[in-house]
Image 1 (cartoon, rainbow, N blue to C red):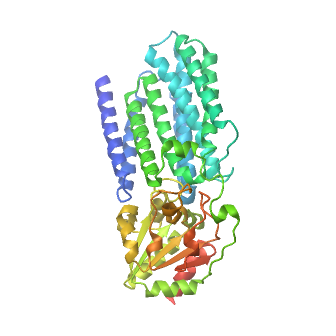
Image 2: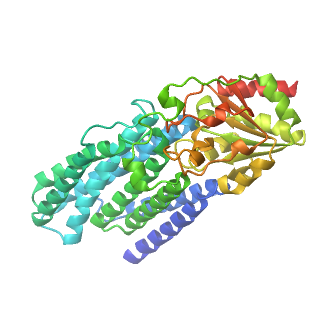
Image 3: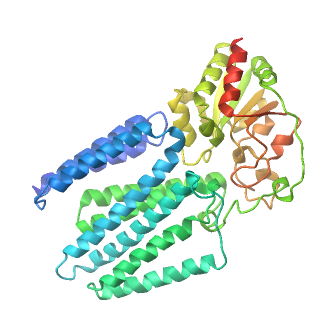
Length: 456
């Protein structure tokens, strides 16, 4: 029986690995997600056959309730709210790991092996930290609390102090396994650290935070797997933890910043440039008719989507407009920056919802050199990822971040509600460039008007 179970767990792990591989590309993401679902279904089914389960009542109730919540959520949550949903799922994953570790602690009649004691501590600590940290990330993304960094005096010192207290309590618990007070205090400290570590991180860095919290949830699951002596939980948790850390590194590279700078840098506390000094600068406002004429005359167009596109839900109208231009013989492509939006792949998911062909979606390295040969760069709701300050302003938090070279196109069209800076708080020089056509208003309304004008 043990051999059959381990073989099933091995097959499940293989599905997880190929599922993760599929999720690395928009073209194969659906298949990757399906493979991961199959792997998880196998793991759950085999685990339910475990002879230690005496009563299935609560398990069945949990499956029914959880499945219903998951199905309803998946159907009702808009693509714009996907980052919030991912944050919540990360939190629930961490919280579940902490609760399972606490439940297993109550089952031990005698002190278990040292590795089990240590993993109980780590599962509770990382799981609780992930839970509260993810809820803070959700609140920031959902605008339930301000997205700018929340900082106060001696904040880092307090975090360090709580870290030291955790280590002391962990040592006490490992020395005396029956000291439940120490374990509960670890739970409280971890919950507090989850809040304190995420509140000083601004909305500009949310893609990195989501990756990091996702990694934490995997690490917590792996630790719980050691507590339960469950192989598939160890493997799946390790896969999630490792892939989350790799994705975190990719996001940091995309912003040309280190992880400590993201976590402790408090980027976005104040404005920079004109946004900080209050300097009055003016742009020439253009109409949709002006932009439509430029697009109709263009031989090549690169579209740059940003979070404003998601907020306006303009992806369907944008795809319709792009298809009309393609039918006229215009070369149209999409330039997707790795940190555009509020989670990794946010723009890819959004455009896939509108059935934009995958071969039109190009990342920064693939398309950046083409802007200098492009007639029109059309920007919908993007800001920081096209800000030239990343190249020139050494005191800017964006300095050194690889950006899309939209300013090198012959003409730049920007659809935006206002001149407000992006999440980083840095004023965008491109707004004031003579080649830039600023169209103010709701992104969806502006793009729909472009569609109507091109049709006419």
